Length: 134
Image 1 (cartoon, rainbow, N blue to C red):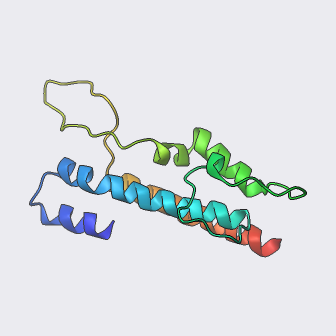
Image 2: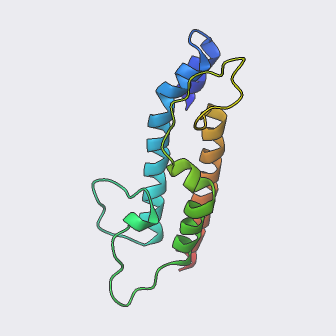
């Protein structure tokens, strides 16, 4: 996201083009970080090649182990919170036309990704605290 900010600050390319270039990679990076947090919350010891991007993608819990409460929190955020918005596909949206009042999809901005990053850091603290307490 620092690179995204640098390109925006240089003002050589239109902001919507910069967003279309950076948003997919930034989204993938944040989803990977989220997946590693999910695995940590589940105390998974065998690390997969790729992290899951959703609670539904987690490996099955061994018999006798209870699903951690943090996973329920994450699942709720996927269904109706910021994680669900992050998981949504990036929509490539052309710049608004002066005479166009409506458009399909939502254009993602650097500021939106910065908000998601802050939320992810907060979630990491929550999961870390839960791990420390167990």
